[in-house]
Image (cartoon, rainbow, N blue to C red; front, side):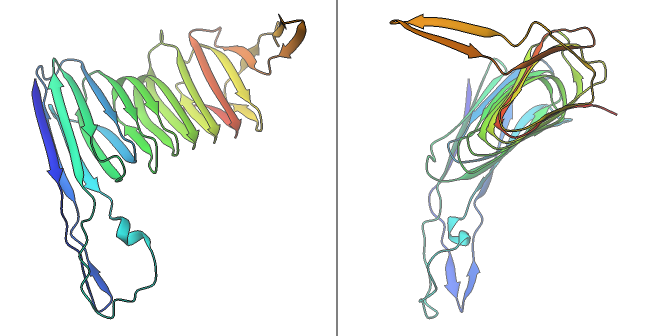
Length: 274
């Protein structure tokens, strides 16, 4: 198992005559795979920050790590009168472990925002990518199985080949596929944001769609399931309850694996690639 680690603990910023000169916190990790050219796995999660993953014509996983300078984002009015400002900045604490073609990226900087820009080989991959606060997930030009999760931010997947699952709470989901895994089920959901997915024209799917506070649009001809909506009846402690599901069910191109798309506050767009 190969383990690589970045720790930077101190940055000095000088404030002279109202001008800020900041030293940018940026480091790089290069992680060789045990079996270059073979399928690999990537697991990466942040508490605070953004993650960008892009496929490239190389054999290593290359991780560029950038720390956010919170002092640049504003604060109280300047009363320094030309004094020098010395600040500890943000710590960068990022490690990457590789074993059996699986790369795991960790960070110990819980409260400090960072940005990870990760270049990965074009070979088939299984990726699990997540962040929680203050950032977006952007993935492009990769091939394989993607699982992405965000809480306060957007998810954008561009030029994807394979399958994807994407979930965010406060943010939009935008996905465009070059090709899809014809046997894989997929799911795209947001609570407060739009869900916008572009599929190849050859898509065959059983769709399950729901938007509580928005509309649903499709370039595809969807054959609706006339047996829906589904009515659920339950009884508990003498109380009877009837619930009618507000999902839209249907088939695209005679049906196939399930594709679920839902949002509470936003529109759903099912686009056909031109």
